[in-house]
Image 1 (cartoon, helix red, strand yellow):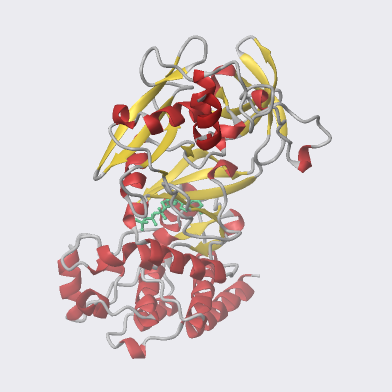
Image 2 (cartoon, rainbow, N blue to C red):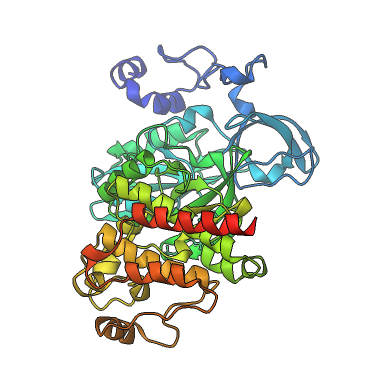
Length: 492
Ligand code: ATP
């Protein structure tokens, strides 16, 4: 009987091994059911000896090194533990840049390399994410996965889809390391536990038919980077679609990370727009570095601009000390970046000082191009929405939603006003509705006292009612740069 079932039901080997523990199945090595194969290290970490899988760990949380002896890790990083010392372990990081150091012992958990490569094992996803994933196509009735437990470190949960419902079962760890769903029914590993419940599925309320299929990355190329390569360090700000953090890429490169909930955008739009962002490269445009689009939330990683957005910068102590020449330099840089977008036939749609970022030496770069349109389209085009940046918006956009490079030129005129008032809000004291009304009756913002008349002339050109009569960005750049040169020469 034993020989017969072993031969014909080989996929249930774990169960047969449990029933007849003293015999060894033909397809198993004689050591029992633990795989003796050592796990090879990545080539760039050689010449270290090969490690047994028992020394492989994963970081449970982000940890920031506080001294040279400590090792910074991100949640999910793979680690090799070399020795234990009190409450600390000496670890070698196997993901990202190789490095060695101490981290608190409770920040790591042992991983079974065999398990981590199983199609049903989903590391680092939450109960909600598991639920969403299992309920979305192509997953169906009987799809299942095992994930790390959110509340009990070192334990797991089994999530199973039963038609339109997902059930979750805690997989507890006994004092001897055995894993169980039902007390008194432990298994040495997840593989065996699953095999048992595949047969005895009534306990988990649904047959375990197929492992959950993960979401495919939205961007499948070199721009897609694993989340573990990034460490979030400090929140820089918050926009409509999420937070922006200062971070470190591979522990070395300072970056800005925009964290977006995918619910805020359509996947196909995102893919298309990222193609746009990748193709746009100019020194006056914020450079895209990477994207993490596997799982949620989505990371958009760009270069870091240390002085933040232009609107806040202008009203800061440092900003208020800027001379007229400095202000014209800012205007020229933005016109330069917009000339590039104009050549590429890209409409920004949200040109404003809040979307210009400032770096060292008064370097200014345009941000939120492309994405502005992608992310804000629905919101901005909803009639009556209070989200429309009305005070920056050309009349034809406010009335008919007809965006064009010429409507960007109008917004550029408002941006000039912000620059020459050191960050004041335009049409102060007027509501959005009043602004639209006043503009349609021919009202235009007055010349700020600190603004040279010639520059104010440029603003008025940008605010021509007839879009066709507004200058191009190329013409604006030429004009402003020649004013800059003239003023610069007269001062030196
Ligand atoms: P919204 O997205 O609603 O238009 P926003 O453009 O201000 O608002 P985000 O682009 O999300 O929002 O940026 C929020 C803030 O984070 C910015 O105002 C800026 O201060 C900071 N920030 C954004 N990107 C960077 C970056 N690359 N470098 C430095 N700081 C940044």
